[in-house]
Amino acid sequence: MHLCLFEDKSVPHLFPLALTRTAGDLRVGARTLIESQVAAFASTEQLILWTRPEVADVTRQEHPNALVNAIPDSATSLLLVNQQWLVREGVVLSEILEAAHPGSPERAWKQDETLLAAWLPNPPKDLLDTESGEALAYAHTVEDEVVIQRLWDLIADVPEHTTHDIEQMGGLGEHRGEVQTGALLAHPESIHIASNSVIRPGAVLNATDGPIHIAVGANVEENAVVRGPVYLGEKSVIKAGARIEGSAIGTGCKVGGEIHESIIHSYSNKAHDGYLGNSYIGRWCNLGADTNTSNLKNDYGDVSIYDAVAEDFLPSGRQFAGLFMGDHSKCSINTMFNTGTVVGVFCNLFGSGFPPQHIPGFSWGSPDTAYGLDKALRVAEIVMARRGALLTEADRTLLSFVFDTYR
Image 1 (spheres, rainbow, N blue to C red):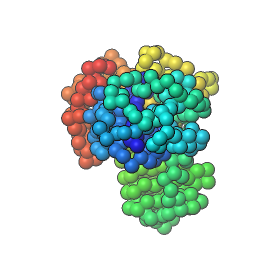
Image 2: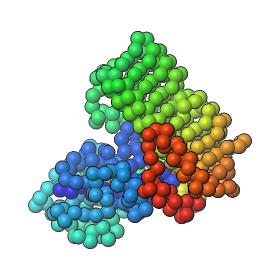
Image 3: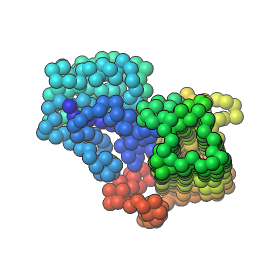
Image 4: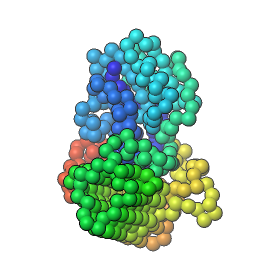
């Protein structure tokens, strides 16, 4: 059985965060959507990823062992799974796993009008030319499954999703890294500290309300307070005196100040004081010192958030929502973000007062001034080189497409 993870038509609602990656590479909790799906379905065959043509090359970079936008001749059976489905244990997953075996007839699972999965024992060779498998006639109707279809879905239940992922990863109670004298671990049986990581004197890791996973090579500095559930990715650093709770921080990040129920995808910095709450930060971002986000309106009302498809602000149904920042965006010291602000890719923000609640990509200072593509790419090259990463030709091609199409 080949596992094929496909994007569906709702992906543009996840812009700007999905502009620079296939939807399944969005982090939801400690894992990306694709990581959760691969773990759940555990196929031994080559993984197939079905994505928009413009992100195909960067998807190949991210998943060098996967086949992108093609079906191998050897695929005698195929399990299609929606990349935006947050797969969890339960009846639906069990049904699919039971159905996906030789001899079982074709079937599909839908929630409302969204195809979650389809089992194809004899997939047609032109399957990729169809509309994400939606022509399948026979489908089970399911409900109560989580599908990430709007920006605000990414920040819903971050502590719960992080807890689930950490528990699935295993290793709780293992402390392989260096816990220095004076560090405090509350409920150490619910804390994983991987090799080559360091917990420095005065740091407090409190797993009373949820587990904590400190990945390989990560560092929790002096007097930082980490209240689970928290995931700290490989080679990431929690700076001295920080307060982190209910959050997932990916690979290669530096974080400080106060972070509450937020996701920082990877390779981004919020190294200084300031508040980040109920927010989602992409890759290669930097928040200047004393940057603060509002995550609650003064009237405690529903937060409206900009939707790229509607090209307007839509009610999110959420009382708490902070900042959504696309890849490679940065802001100056003392920046203040209003509740539910959406910042596109490659924005360089500075100036007094609150920025607008929607800032299109490649904005320089304000939406009225464009951030030139050549300059933006030069900055990205410098920033990435500091972490030992390269701005590849695939990256340049995609970012040029985003600039030409969405600026």
